Length: 196
Image (cartoon, rainbow, N blue to C red; front, top):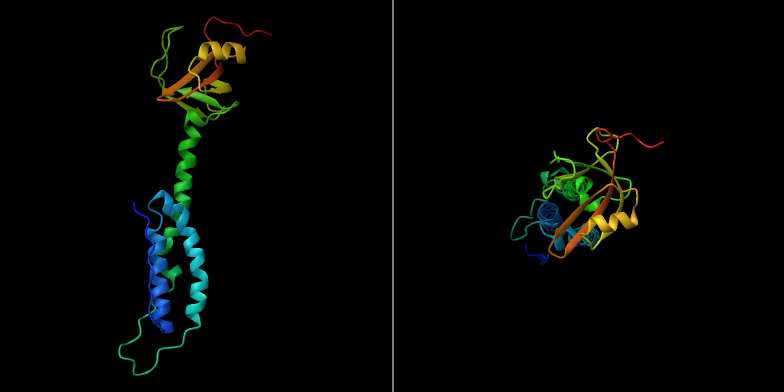
């Protein structure tokens, strides 16, 4: 989307100035968030408009017998449906947090993961894992992240040297972006006995 700055100029009486300010603030509340630059600039512009509203409040009332009737100021901004636009940043931030919460790209040491694409054969390599971060208390948690190494997809060697307790790894590589999570299994493998 294109970032636009709109202004209304002209001689205003108090009623017309309030109507213009309320309409433009309502438009900004609803339309001002659509685009990454707009999400940053819109709150700043709305804060900068507060002193303008104080100036509008000091304008004289409309004169009787004016060539046209004064504009109706309408409902205050907080009583208009567009006030729900205030929730847009909160909803966007919540969505980003929810996406990051499960994404292994944001996993850190101590987090637990689950692979929805389980490997059936022992020792087999899953070339198409569907990994997500889950709470360690979740019964689906299969491994704990011991550490993360960026800019490498050589999980076996990196995890063996950096995290000797690691018994597995997850690598991600797409274009120039790559990282490895070194993992320790939480579930006992059949036929093994935990060491004391």
